[in-house]
Length: 257
Ligand SMILES: C[S@@+](CC[C@H](N)C(=O)[O-])C[C@H]1O[C@@H](n2cnc3c(N)ncnc32)[C@H](O)[C@@H]1O
Image (cartoon, rainbow, N blue to C red; front, top):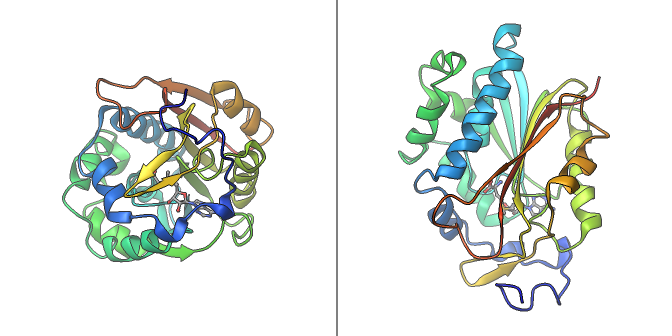
């Protein structure tokens, strides 16, 4: 039996889920008020991935995309040294409001996330990450299935979105397709997933998920990614974030030229 009862019996497409009731404050408090060990491992791996691909290239002025940003600023922070613009694309209205407010002067909770990033030299050159994020970030409300521009982003992230927006595997694949098409050839990317998620609660509402494992992630990305794509598993460290998942998955790569 699933840990969140009924979710697997009740299919829910992306357009059926209650995004207008997604409680941004509850989601932020539960997930990002402090840095969890699994997020720390993901952040360090993304830092090293972007650092390895970009630090020596001298790239600046890139356009970053964080798709389905929610109330998570760490994917955007991971792109910050190379970006003059970062689009935070998001469907849920309360998350859009939260992002617009948070980027003005982000909270002190994000300092320990930034601290992890500064263990790579590339991040040490950003003297004032709060000011940099404020000037770079552009919050765009929209539905990734119908409103996401194609081909405009030089670097991209999508964290816990493709598998966490619907029970449908077709929509999971569709979200990956739209993310990939939003990036330019050669663009470095990082995509994170909840492994085998059966859905999640935010405030008093339940949101759908599609159960995916490592092979699903490889299948969905390998047609778009260069041959150096990696997909790694992060075990649940001690206390799980919530019931109903078996770990996290992280795909790192760059788009095929
Ligand atoms: C589980 S949350 C992940 C949020 C954040 N990226 C994180 O790392 O915590 C899923 C996010 O996907 C967003 N989302 C769901 N459907 C979407 C769609 N069709 N277009 C854009 N964003 C969508 C939700 O509003 C929510 O912010």
